[in-house]
Image (cartoon, rainbow, N blue to C red; front, side):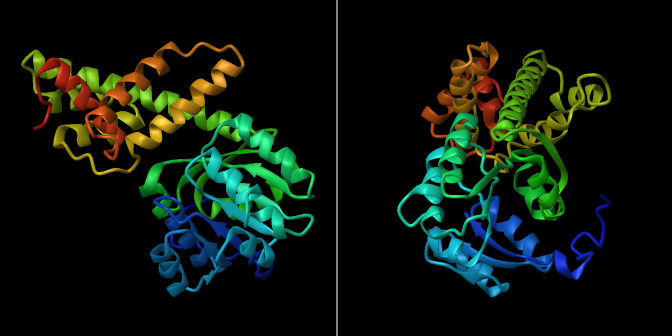
Length: 310
């Protein structure tokens, strides 16, 4: 799909849908705004009233609970922090299952434990509600410009039905397999990103300790095999000591915890992931959990007694 000035145009009148959107945080708010720009009706709920009010000013309808959203909509997107929040939104008191009509589809775009995705999906299915897991990658900037990468698990025919809707928020939408598979792909993504950021941090710290300008080292290696999206996104932030979060360390800790829990459930060894998890825990202990995950470099700066800042 081309991404230009027609990104948010509706191809056909019947493409417009009335959607529920639960979770208007750092990712959910811009994602929901893109759905409004595309002409969809939205009924939104979040415990943060200011975020709800912001969407209402743009044309959304507010709801006082997930159950109230489900009463109004038979397609609902959830974008909340972790597994317990998805379970609460779907199955808890005031949750979707209390009022949802049979045939309702919940698209959970949160990043959670795939084992829990399957469990929640099984409970919803008993009430005639279908769940797809569709976690995203790309952080706040790509949520804002509608170019997220979406990894989807669930029934293939449901994926096909909602592909165009998901593409309103995304640059790529890929079907991975049965329910839970989307979150498996997301965990794989988060493992690779975490290890890459740690590798960039080690390399920049090495350059500085050796007396070579880390900025010039970055420019020298970015066009070769070491070049990556992670390198280009995070090395400049490290060198500027700009740790304004696109993706917070505390959220990456959550994702790596889910990856390690899932790996233990199937006897898969993730030794490098475990090591980076401990680095992030050290950063959290130092009060850096709200920083962007590029702040992994702070750990290396601390143990090497050097700063890579320009």
